[in-house]
Figure 1 (cartoon, rainbow, N blue to C red):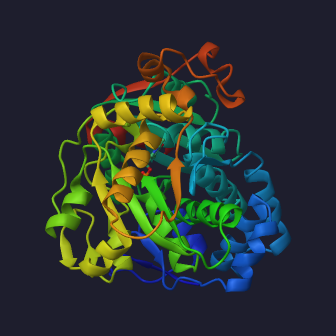
Figure 2 (spheres, protein in one colour):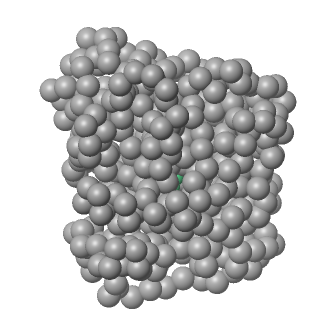
Length: 450
Ligand SMILES: *Cc1c(COP(=O)(O)O)cnc(C)c1O
């Protein structure tokens, strides 16, 4: 299996190169050159399989030749040693709760596997590997936790202090050891720009840099697994399901699209964004305009004005979008509109839905999952005919990550899951930095350049 750049201007590489490069040399994102298709029997067989076993089935298709089956199986069992509840909310409507991992967000699914793959494939005799990550909320914590304590690897997370919750910050700042947290005086987009500049900077060429952002193929692939898993728990092949994905950088929804191409019967992917509505607008108008600066919403991990995975979505539909968001070759917009239902949800609607879901059904949502929940509702309302399809709304974080918001809306603070217990008392450390590339370059050069 080879991996090709969405910019179509770099040589194809194998999985290991794609994993460590993060971004392709032409600034595109790596995509598998073809998407493996699972047979109907294989999909049916998932019914009796555990989450780690389903992860192994899917990932083995992308890693074939690089890792022994027993080894991959061990990594999957080690990474996915927590619950993945598929909760029945209403008739034919389920909530997939991806919040039981070590940092209580869905980013754990990808980070846990990527860290294990990097640790597995790293050149053990080589230089220190430096993992750079910009975060709008949850990536930093998940990546920091996944790599914490792995020998030979350092993690640097850049976060916008004004946009992350206290608990999100603490997940990055209380680890120390091989984890360094940097508070960038700016927004998520500034953090992401610093990371992207560092990768393109020849001055830093001697440093073994890699990315753990959702541009990394090692994060993308594991995000297709939970769609297959959810399907196996609620459906009988070939009955299709609708999935609703609260989206920011579009890595999670790309996971759904990959699962679909692999043969998991997904009839529609509802892509729900907050007020950063550049993609719903794109699907409506056919014209892509990024939002700069991105808008600050309560679903803070989705405050993204130019989703980095959009280039992958476009490539999946035969188009080409470069890293600046310019459409070099238009994708098949009709097919995209058939497969996706993209909708923007305001903070007011998000808050209302958290209140309603609790009052009407004792369903506890947090701001990100609530955006997906509203998106699914709108989709179902607009459907004219037929009964309700089988639906899965993805809940991407634990409500206890946003205690202030939940308390304000519902009058109580959510119970703290074991993964977050102890966080509030740990001691924090981080570095402050202006949103200025010279400063970031100097920091990296001083620490790592030989
Ligand atoms: C990152 C994140 C999202 C958005 O996921 P993308 O893959 O960036 O679209 C949604 N919800 C939560 C809680 C997140 O941390």
